[in-house]
Length: 288
Image (tube, rainbow, N blue to C red; front, side, top):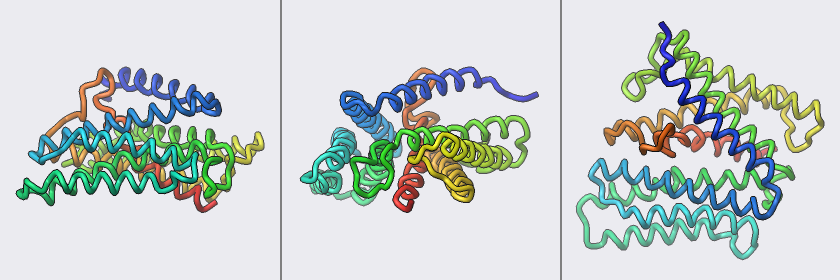
């Protein structure tokens, strides 16, 4: 008997998330919505970083949560400003450097465990805030001279859709035909069969996006057959690795969910696959 006890909750959460993202993407060209999107991503960065700090706290690490959460929010704002103004081009690096200085300074009277504590806090910013900041660069490529595309909305939709279809494929593949455990210590419910189905679903949807772009002549979304397969497969692999990576952190902290939000668990739980998928698409767009 197949177990789909959590299917309804997953569908409701996914439908709500995708609907909200679709509205933001569609209206993202308006300046006020652009600021709203930046604020939303900054808020999400702060919440996800706060959840990450809770994992560190559960491990007994000395964490300056307010400093890290504030730095995570400022990192998103700095990335946005660096896209808007030439004088702010070094702002994202500046935030990370200042945050690092502050973290070291706060440990000057706490020698024991400093290496683990300092490293985990700096890693938290790199793990959460930096990838989320790259989402802005994907959505608004026209604000960056490094991109050759002018409208990032289709690429943003591509990123969310391919990443989530990987999760959907892995879920149904694992429930229906899954037998061999993928990572039994980290996530007992994940299987090799589910991972393969998720991989195939991602490539299939990537090909659909490529065909959609050619059919309607969207120059912003140009994908050859080979690139469709490689990029879709790359995002699928990164998404599943990101899922397992967060499971590793939670297992080490002995915490089931990063938060207790109704229907979500935690923001970090929802973002885990995207945090690894975002850089894949970002670096791909830098090569086209």
